[in-house]
Every structure is written in C-alpha cells, then in structure tokens.
Image (cartoon, rainbow, N blue to C red; front, side, top):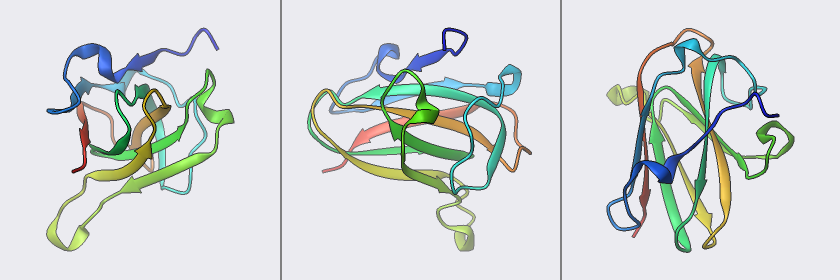
Length: 130
C-alpha cells in the first residue's frame, strides 16, 4: 500500500564488495507486517534489498530480522528466513540470515522488536559471503 514506506537498502551507498549499511529507528513506525515464526512484534521498518550481483548475501541486524520475497506488499510473500539471537550462550543477540540471490532479485527485510519490547536505533548490514 502507498502508506507503507519501504526503504531501499542499497540507496544509501555501499557496493557489492564492501556491502551496504542502513541505520534506522522504527520507534515511530507501525506494526504493519504479520510476524513470522520469529518472536517479534511492535514498530517495524521495512526495507528492500536488490542483489547487485548473484551470490549469497549475509544480512545482519539486532533485534529481529525477517526476509520475505520481493513485492509491493511484503506480507503477501512467503518468509524466506527469520532470525533472532544467533548465539545466546555468547550474548550475541543479533539476527543474521544468509540468502542465495540471483542478480537483480529483490527481497523485503522487516526489522522489528523482539516480542514488541524493543524500540530504538538499529544498523542493518548486507554483505556478500565469499
């Protein structure tokens, strides 16, 4: 829907070698996309990422990250991956997924709170995996 702001992760600079970074804060956002299997909820930022070249891309953020197939309405697409707290034993509370994408393939990334309890700044990275 037009009311949804979808942020282009690659528009902020970066490149296929060094990766792409976006810093945001969904505090004033809405809970627009239904949660996946990850325990999430609360304000969200929805970003799009279009692979500039084919390969596996690692996407990392804290708190919760859900990747969905690319389309105008992210919620209508299947969940490709979701992640939260990749290594609790070592206090790594980041979310990390790896997606094999074709050149030009787009996905939507939903950054949201863990059980609706987080609201604040985040940093999302997309890096090629060698």
